[in-house]
Amino acid sequence: MTNVSESVLDAIRNAAGSGERPLAADLLLDEDLGIDSLDFVQLVQAVEERLDIVVSDEAAAGVKTVGELVALADAAVRATGKSPPDAP
Amino acid sequence: MLSRLRQILRFIRPSARGQTQEATDAATVRQLRARGVQIGEGCRIYSTEFSTEPYLVRLGDGVGVAGGVKFLTHDGSARLLRPRRPMIQSFGRIVVGDDSFIGENAILSPGTTIGRNCIIGAGAVVHGTIPDNSLVIGNPGQIVGRASTFLYRLEQGKNTLDTFGLPEPTRRAMILAHFGMPDDTVEGTTG
Image (spheres, rainbow over the protein chains, first blue to last red):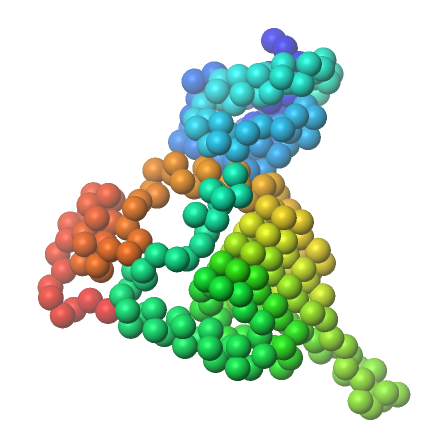
């Protein structure tokens, strides 16, 4: 697992209050993890701060699953051309 | 991106509640301007709680203010100093930038400046300077992310419908149908 995915999964766990529970890529952020629209804004903010990236609002709006958020963050990190920070 | 936000936030379409509500909204703005509130174009304001110094409040263009929002332009605690300064009062201006929205029952403290394209959540207590495109919630109000992130997400929300501006019976029917609820309205019984 990459540092990016570890960072994103950790941020999702914090947002969902799900402890150390494993997060499958196909879990739905809202229905499975109870992350509502306000939580989602905070989650995006947390991911951006952890990885020092900016995620497009338009792209973020379409994110439904854990895996999609990881992929979005991964693409944003790659776009910066920088190495991802150490995993939490 | 800003033009997209303006499309979402600016209240330029005909009112969902018809010309009567449009006229009421316009009358509210006129009355507040007469009291000294500086109000830009295209604003929708459902609060009249502009404190005793309404002339210290300035709202930009396209601002939405929900019901119960309080604009506090003075600090009432200054009265505690009156034993030694009998006439003391402390004031602060409040500025709200273009295309921002202030949610139900939010409180804006003296000296608050809210940027453009911001969303202030219901019940938030806001103080200080809020940068453009901020989403603020809670007491004390905290910036939790970008308003634009929230709006894009909201636009794709499963309970977000295109019902604004429709005649009320049509709107009601669409909403009930969306939630799978029966429309058993008996004519004349709705509010």
